[in-house]
Image (spheres, rainbow over the protein chains, first blue to last red):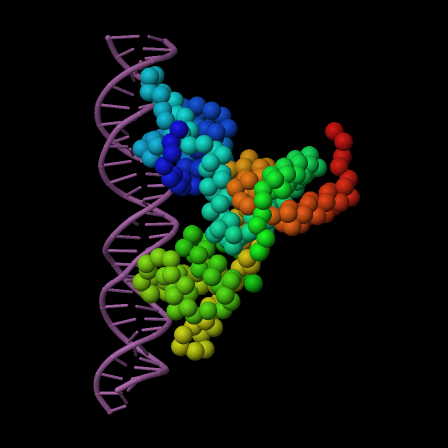
Length: 135
Length: 135
DNA sequence: TTTTATTTACGAAATAATTCGTAGGTTTGC
DNA sequence: GCAAACCTACGAATTATTTCGTAAATAAAA
């Protein structure tokens, strides 16, 4: 798994998303999915994926004629990186303001809400087991 | 306040952030702040702000020689728009996963956690007052 | 008043990102 | 075998973004 600082462009991110969701895929497969939403020529998708390979965002298996591409950056890490950039960039460092924006602007069902509650409890447990020095 | 779909580039977002934080400002003032972190020529900043004016992201008061620029997109709306894009784009529509990333990668104290809890309850109240048709 | 500094407008260069045509090689189906 | 379909590599055109030089106007300083 690649470790350097990777900054996917938005087109690259679209492709990574598909690779994360679907697993190893050929250019053709990715292209089919991409063009469900928008126009694009096949070689455009191909070129993008070749660039991503140069940049080491993806690995590929070249044994068969149709190369098989595999995401080589972790989805979790990438999500974390992007979220952190956003908190610092436009939420003035406040994660909770981002959280509220996320929940406020989006339909969130009870199951999801409960998952978040569980998560909050977990964080709190961790917090309370850490000594916080008084000022 | 402007209403059309606005997609600031990342440079534009840096400037908007300063305008939101600091209020109406001259190019010079913005430029001073920007160059605390990075190199940039004055006319570069100027040009960016002129472009933002064309795109109606900012208004400006031209009464005095040094024009005074004012953000013309709401910070809240922009945050919402960006967060929504991210949820759809890389969190497969799951706001809660974004929330967890945000909280997991960030120190969050008990007060903040409680505020978020309150907010969750509020959302749930709203949810339950809506009829959900059975399948 | 004359010079110096500051500001805007404008255009264009430099860089980054996206898109696609064409060529050459493989594979597949007659 | 031969044509049609498909694949990769490559280069280059197009579009978007960032950067900045220069000129003209105005204000400030000397």
